[in-house]
Image (tube, rainbow, N blue to C red; front, side, top):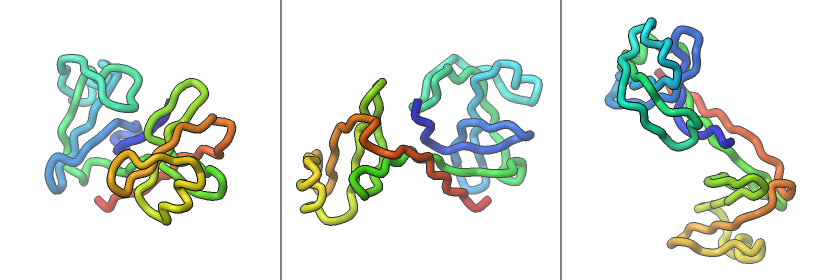
Length: 137
């Protein structure tokens, strides 16, 4: 399962997160026990890349969290780094919007939009890594 998106560390625990306005963060939890930490129960819903349903949320000031970051799944394929946007049990969908389109055509990638190239590859053809980029609080 890919782990992409924005996350925050709050009270030592990682939560799916999003900045709703400057200095205000929404934390999304899949653990109803988090109501003990001031989370409000909500109608269960799914978000991309979070396997379990979100069951409670909490709005906090950015000063209340210790870390805020984005995770991206990347694949090194034939010497190039691509973002992984989808996966199946044995395949990855890689995509790029930067670089020389002639390289992407040579790799068998298809243009799916202006300047956007995509290809499905076997997982064993690439080295997969998670890239973490911290946001300033």
